[in-house]
Length: 80
Image (cartoon, rainbow, N blue to C red; front, top):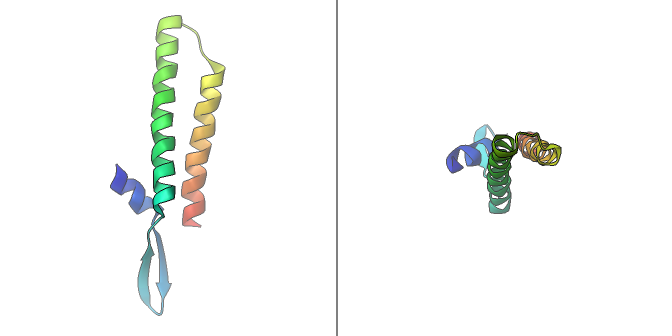
């Protein structure tokens, strides 16, 4: 999974007819890893909440939505 994230965040530019790849910083990679891990944890928490309590938790869903927006924003802004 880490190689997939690194490859998708790598910028490709053309300089003097040559293809140049600019890898993402480690700080950006680690922040995407933490956000993805948090997203997985929150989804598991929401599933457990629905399973055991039988109710939907809007606050957990709002946090999931915010993390999805953050992660997709990072991918879109890095490729621009």
